[in-house]
Image 1: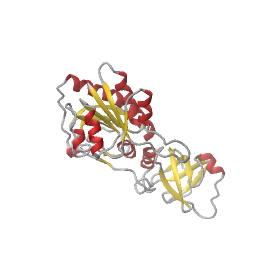
Image 2: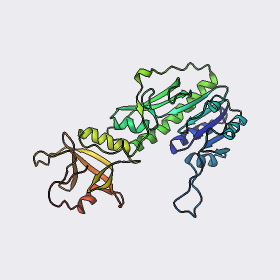
Image 3: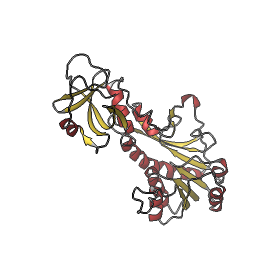
Image 4: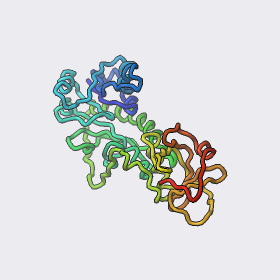
Length: 314
């Protein structure tokens, strides 16, 4: 079976490696990825994508593009004569590309569809406190993430697991899902299942606006929000008019007292950095004040000067 693989970030690498490892069943005839990106050091060579690095290690042919709507791109894929296209964290393909393979094009998505259709499924699942997650393969169609489901794999989400950790686990789980999907298609016929649109939820792109912490939430909701954005792009708040990124937290079991306090109020309790939620206190374990390096809560506390009156994250 001739396979064209399309992907860019680290999430896609285990799937590419798994397909390449089954060379007696699947022939990767082309790897498509994004173009090299300039580095901060202008004298250094541009940085290849994780998928390009893996493809080069595996000795696979690579085609780079940032324009999936170009005629050149469509011609390149057509010239590869794929039986199947596998997509894992790439771009939205036009029909003239995903309709090329005789056996179809499928995508590996980081959720249990139809839950969390969109750009950031892993983040939103944790931000919403979901106890389970998974990956789904589905055949592409024009509407994003709405295609018929081929198969899926499910996994529990730990109560303190963050998005980076879950994404890494799902990438490994997804490699097995992709290999199983290819085998199902090769053995055929596949009978995919239509998604129930009534159960669909959204996972929109993460922006500056929707990653800001709203402190008027329960401690559990705040903790889930922080871990759902860790380590990138990170949940953020302000202190004294400057941005503070918060990477790691945990609910605080104690009660520092002091009467009624507004959400976001900061307290120092036996060296612990605490922030008030609506129903208790959240301990901040790792953070990065604007203009400084990331630090643990203890380091922040040692340099913290509260001044007069209550101090709040806002």
